Image 1 (cartoon, protein in one colour):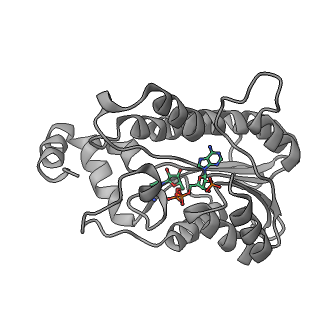
Image 2: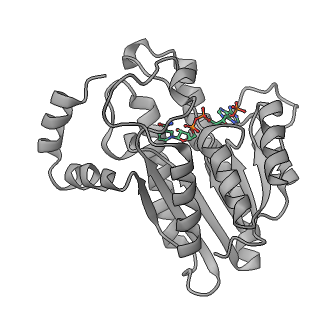
Length: 257
Ligand SMILES: NC(=O)c1ccc[n+]([C@@H]2O[C@H](COP(=O)([O-])OP(=O)(O)OC[C@H]3O[C@@H](n4cnc5c(N)ncnc54)[C@H](OP(=O)(O)O)[C@@H]3O)[C@@H](O)[C@H]2O)c1
């Protein structure tokens, strides 16, 4: 997809990877619709990109009768050529200590909200014969991560959703609707502090969010189905697929927090 002139909705645009992606897309000529909760941060990104800020909370729990954050966002965004589904929250710790409400919330924000947003935006893309969907997943969703079971499950869900959707969409040659899954490893953002457990390992070293943003823009322009950031992450992903038992032995040995 040509980014110049495309109308792009970025969720999670107020911070980290989403904010960097908004800046990257804007530098390539996209017209932006920016979603997040932090109105001040969102306004800052809007000012730098010329984008339109549409604050929205994608978690459920609003009392009955009040506007639904996802439906309201889709309606206010209008026709969108590109969706970058980036908003997400984490939680780390032993699963049996995870509050049930937190588990529900992670599933709702990371997975359900973006499934619903896609359901609301895709018919317009199909009608116009043009569109691209980008899902920011995680290596956790490919190989699983100790003490991140629910987070990993939401990201695995996004990957399976995107993979399945691809079969239903018309081929991308010429006009069509593309689907890209983005699989970052550790990215230097507020994500870890916000989930309540900072990232303290030396390896793998965190990559800057701008690197993920560039990979997203290139993947959209070139119609790539899947990108790993950094690219070497493809190796553990392939090892996990080809030799899961060997992978588990290595992960138990080296994967302690
Ligand atoms: N950082 C990493 O190492 C890493 C690795 C792999 C994948 N990822 C994924 O990358 C995505 C972006 O994360 P990040 O690293 O950029 O973290 P971040 O800086 O914490 O950004 C998270 C974004 O999601 C938004 N968000 C969270 N909960 C929301 C809710 N209920 N409603 C609406 N928006 C909500 C936040 O909005 P507000 O700030 O306005 O609340 C913020 O814009 C996430 O999906 C994350 O799972 C991150």
